[in-house]
Image 1 (spheres, rainbow, N blue to C red):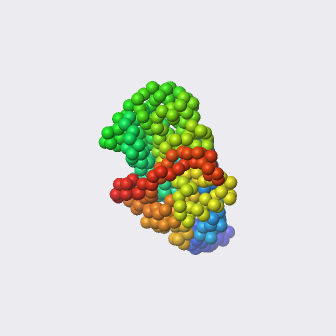
Image 2: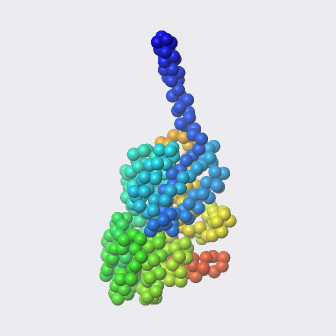
Image 3: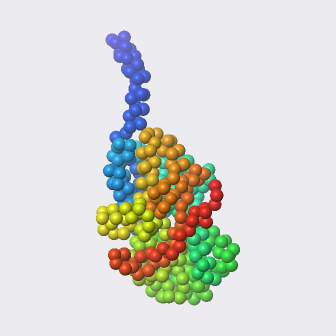
Amino acid sequence: MHRRMFLMSSAGIALSALAPATSVLAAEEPSEFHIASILAFSGAYGIIGKDMRQGVELAIADRGGKVLGKPIRVSWEDDETKPQPAVQKATRLLAGGAQMMFGAVGSASTLALQGLADQRKIPLLVTISADDKITRTNGSRYTFRTSNTLGMEIRMCVEFAKAKGLKKIYGVTADYQATRDGWDLFVAEAKKAGIEIVGNDYAPLGNRDYSVIVDKMAKSDADGIAVMITGNDAVTFLKQSGQVGLNKTKTQFGPVLQDETLAAAVGPAAVGVYSGVRYHFSVDNPANKKFVEAYRAKYNEWPSSFAGEAYDGMSWWLDVVESTKSWDREKWVEAFAKSTRENSLEGKKVMRACDHQAAQVGLWGVVVEGQAPLPPLTMKITDVFEPSKLFDAC
């Protein structure tokens, strides 16, 4: 009996020696392409997640819901605009076999996911978080950003203030590391341009009462109000500043302060507010016209900057994955690091191998009253900045 057991065990070992080839093949060709999507559907940036999801879903639908011949499945999770839930939920999805991560909205969550991406050697696609540390020279091998950096948006803010002839600026900044860094950069660049900073207040994420800050701004001699907040917080601030007529006496502007989604939430007080715009449906090229038509047909609304960037980045990523004809994630990473998106919704985007940041144009605009069929409040693009003006050389 013992001999029989030994022979059976030996046979099992012999068979197992052959197994790795089958296992490797199974790993190389899974049954699906699984994306772990960690976005904000609640919290300070909760207004953004829905639009990003719609952009991604359309990008997937455009390719018949498949990549490398396998169906694409997306698991949607809400990080509540907080890093800890972002990591917890992403970790669970990666344990379930997700081959890449998409997200987040807030830079703190994205930086937390970046650590997970490096640890697990899983690609992370970023289409909205702007902290400059996300894409840095010799930084994360597995993280790629196809949207704006905060640095390029701050440069646009300074150029706007100079062109507008603003002399004195009062700021309000989200008490959040990325926006604190952005404010410091703005102050340094503004001073070089001879612009005086007369005040600044930090407000916590999710702040619901800006009345004290708005009162200080109204009583100051500032001619410009730099608003370094976004999402629901930006909506709250502009509503409250509009209630006291701050928008009538001072120029309000910010790096990601407004688009059509946020302007609709603010209401009439949004008119005349200037902002950097990460994407806009009015960009005149064939790819964008096709996207806008499909988006409106599917969702019965104009695409926001968050939807446009999510669509653009995910379409780019999936096309590169397809081009590798491989399930090897390292090949995806290597290919994306040297890729160019000729038919981006915003024109041409070039992925910089040095920091995995897409070099691209910067859009700047102002909220105006839209004429049908445009939204009642729409962004009018007033300036387009070339990449050479916004990015330092590698």
